[in-house]
Length: 318
Length: 259
Image 1 (cartoon, helix red, strand yellow):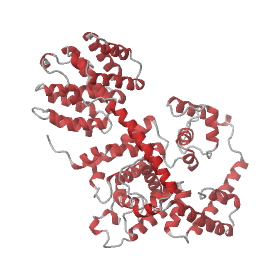
Image 2: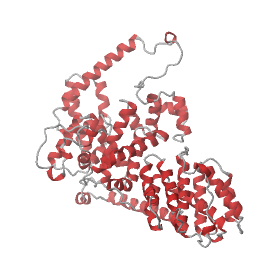
Image 3: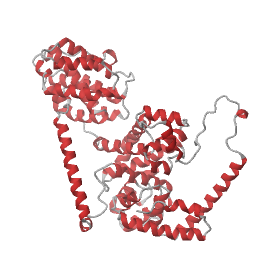
Image 4: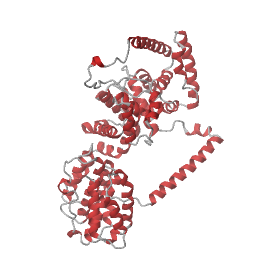
């Protein structure tokens, strides 16, 4: 969008308390129309005179019509949750017929069925955020089991990593940060900087990385400070990959700490389900089947679990 | 922890809407895979640019979702102009759906052969149709030449058979002249309509919007709109016929208004 597209001389560019006071002699075009004014037109919130002005602009400007057609198509496809209904409720109520009732009943049935399916899917315990997983890990011997870096020297560096794998790496780095913070470790801000760096390498990621960069400048971190940053990170990478990355990192830690309770927990079962779901996105890794087998066994082979979790992180996150 | 800039906070809170609208427009304009990802990243960067200048201009008079949709549609137009020049998917491709738009984009904009386009679409999981089936879809689309120059290879030009003979060029000129006359007659006939009626006709035929979308966008009842459009077309037909426009040119105008 060019600068003059954003406002400038059109009436809609002025504050709302001025918009009814004067008329403009400047024709509104795609180059001069204020986006918020077009948004108000789309929402049906302009008065008659302003509406006519935008209608005339749309009539005259092919560029503006193209933009308008895109807006209507996008709002039709997506529920941006904002566009008021086309008809007001009283008119809609008057035109309800028997056929409409039948359709409404059918629609209601479908909504109930869909809601039930979603509810049932959610009941299949989606993998929790890293902070929730960390809370389930025993902290008794936390100090003696700092996990070795899964990616060695390349972690957090500027090496090109596929966007697909980046979610896992960010998740693992967040898990490390949460662990260090939970243990009151003074190096937690450095771990925050690693997460920030990973996020900053993504398109527009310096916004996603900003909350972690701010944390990196703090002297001491608390778990409460981490949550908003973690929520923000899930906007920039695939949240499922992020959570699986965190879970795999914590499986490694649990194996190193001998934390069988974590490995046998519902979180681990959810983690196994999630890696099955994610597997089609990545190149085949034999660590998936081995890890599942080890984690479903009656007694845990901790070394094998740690090794396979590490291999899977490297296979999918590099 | 330092306070977040309000515009940054607005951006983060509505990132799913931003990506959703960008994704929707990418599909509408035939982008997928890496191209769609590039487009989404470009949109994000434009919104962040100049310390979120676009978001700082939001006054809160409209809903944020609608505002973002308008802003992204404006940005998308700039993106297309920068990357594609004047090229855009044809109305026929849009009518036929996403696959036709992608197919047309790959062949006409990027210069792939139909078989290559088919391979690209199948590899990306966008279709399971065979080349023959895709050719059937492609045959329904208008023939167009790529706007941008295409590589011609090392073959000497005098060894390449001319694609258009003199007769074809003459026929094309006549067709262009006819189209110009029809266009002029149409503009003249439309000039007596109200701005809203003119817009409805233009959205329906120039932008190929469905009657349902036009009704939704202009907050009109859909069923009466069909009748209104039919009345307008009847008027147009009479005026255009009086202006000497042939039945052949009129035919295309009349296939859309019936409910």
